[in-house]
Image (cartoon, rainbow, N blue to C red; front, side, top):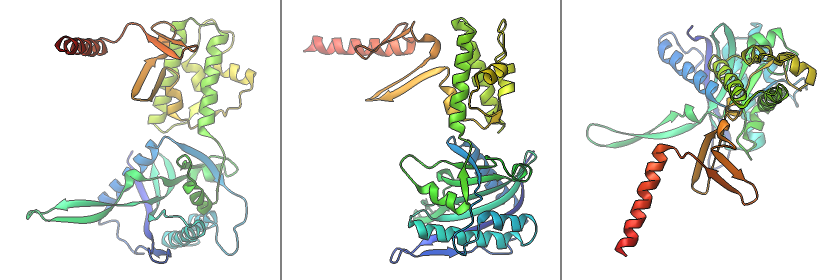
Length: 353
């Protein structure tokens, strides 16, 4: 099913270098997207794909706290649009002014194009709100003259949130109908964006995924599976999670129980989780990077990069914590060839000397 745009608006926020004043330039009210429908759909489809691919997301809901002063809350503006009390363009311009106030309050440099889009995809209805930074690119004409221009750098999208409108309407008391990109480590840039939306973090996808992985490890240990069965269980979980991520579906504990069903176990995985009282939701959006580590160990630093299957640990790969050393048996053939060539090269140098 293709993506269907219901409404879209674009406004531009910039800062004057001399004074630091935030300037808001509103987009046209009567943009005829019908004439540019293919380009607009491709643009939003690209934003949708980039947003879905972002690994570090958190989930939350609108805060019940009243707004400060006379500033309107984003949720109230959105509601007035959804209930047809005002049109989409008026909603978007008012939201843009709220964002302008937040940028001024935080005194940060994050500016760019504010895109607000109401669209449908795979039976879901969403409102995507994002600030896309501007980057410069260069081109050369037929006379070999270089010219510079600006473009929307969608790949650098960091300030973005998406509201699941179905979930918001049906489960307004829930804690995860808003998803947003987590701010980079050590930065508070995303804080002002969450304040702009009036969003407070609820479900932590990373913690939920870590709990799931730990529960699976406990489950295979309690059922005393042999090493091969343990590795198969981990790979089955990994495959299931990859499928869910690809289809933008939540991970379900009951479904995981069916996927990693163990013959001879007294309890299935779902019953095991309930018995152990893990702090985990029945279903939740997961972080694939956390699940990937269940079958592989990897690390890099000081010019060394290493990755190996978990099943090799203790056999083909042995770690000695006393002298902080790692011994690798059964060196991969392609690496062995390189090492042998390096040894021969070093021996030839010694001979010449």
